[in-house]
Image (cartoon, rainbow, N blue to C red; front, side, top):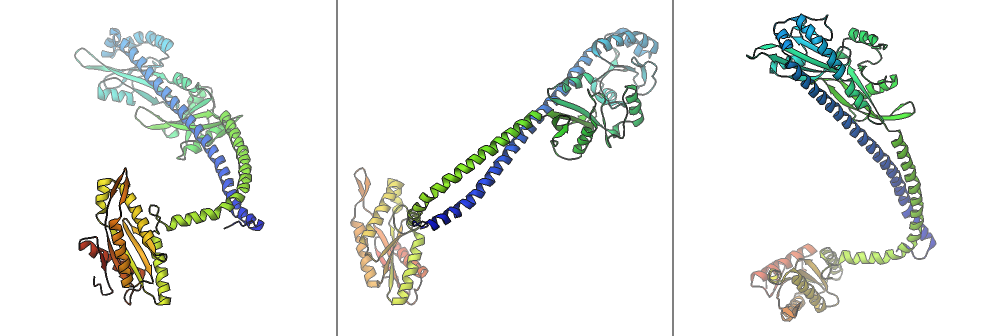
Amino acid sequence: MFLKGNQKESLQLRLWFLIPLTSIMLVTLLLNILLTQQHSTKDINQNVDAVAQHAENLYREGINNSASMLGAVMEVLATDQELRLALAHHDRAKLLQRATPIFGELRKKFAITHLYFSDSNRVNILRAHQPARFGDIINRETTLQAQRNKQTSYGVELGPLGTFTLRLVTPWFDADGHLLGFVELGMEIDHILRVVQHIDRVKIFLLIDKQFINRKEWEDGMRMLGRLPDWENLSELVVNNQAAEEIPVKLAHDLQQHMQTEQIFMEPIMTGASTYQGTFRPLKDVTGRNVGRMAILLDISKALEEAHKISHRSMLMGGIGFLSLFILFYWLLGFVGKQLEQQSQHLREMAEHDGLTGLYNHRMYYRRMDEEFMRSGRTGRPISLLMLDIDHFKLVNDQHGHLAGDMVLKALSELVAHSCRMLDIACRYGGEEITVILPETDKTGALEIAERLRKAVEAYPFELGDNKEIHITVSIGVSTSSELIKSSRKITDSADHALYLAKERGRNQVVYLDQQYNAN
């Protein structure tokens, strides 16, 4: 249809096909590159998330292990009768005398930095780590929880310097169950952060919200630690001084800007010769407040380099594939053009004919009927229609199976086609209903043809295979065009109504319905 050996038409076909094909292939190539980049980004993000989860687990595990260690130390302290007696009598001098050497050993062996003794009203009697300071009421959450629950409480609390301290508080009771006071052990969590920060290719920074820190105390603390305090460096955050290294100013600003967004992962950050991909984990104190964020940065320089290599390879391979396909399709189109007409004809056959019976299908029935009415309008010759239906066809399917039913329907269609005249048009109307259009045929001729067909079906042995055969009958409704029946729809409705009457009257018969719907 498209190619007839003409070079111009062949070129037009190639252009018609290859221009959109080229566009699609280029878009596909670009999408492939984009998807490769997205896949690389997804892999990097998943890696960052896995590292962040690992860091978070290490942090929690470190807190729990340290709390368990503090609990074991507390159990040992609780057996010291001198300490218990001194706490019961609020004897600060005795507490100081006994607790000082104990605290020295605890600091040396376990890095414990705080040891408090407070009375039952939470008034501090002794800070073994800071003896000169006492008499104040301890209102930290760990102590309040221990008082409320009358049992050991622990958790991480944020100090005035923006540092985190793990505190464990235990209420001590006498033999009668009377509260003697509270004993608190505390330790900085630097050792836990160092463990987390030693994850390969990872930088971790703790960013603390300024609203939880006293500026003056923080600046004094920074000077005491030998660091230059810069409260105004970031608008809302300060960097925890327990970090293993100073955070670059630009990196700190990038981290703060990202914290103001709702994105899970940061945009890659360049610092020095490395590129980092980051995410955040909330830092909560013992009260459950979000007091800051743990910024976890993974060095993705090597991953990005590998992603770029993959992207370049994808572009190269895609370009080669694109060129190869272009040449292949250009060559194939010559062959394809020669096959189009044959395929087109085959498709028309499939579109116009029923797949099982080979008769015209339902759609073609109305098209051919419309054509016959147009011709009848020109010639004035009548049109008749037979509509036949297999009697008790459901029993055939039920008793012999649907495959046998298909064989019967196909054989019946062949019998009808062979019984028709050359000008007659047989169609499968639907299900087991078959229509036969009889051009230039009046009532008498239509009834003769219908009766002859009915007898032929009744006498015909329908083979089912395995040497089995059955006999069937059909009911036939007949109608002829007239002054009142001038369209495909009306003659179809009339024949269908006649078929219904044939069924009602006992089947295996022919019924004609005229324009007044009188049956005979």
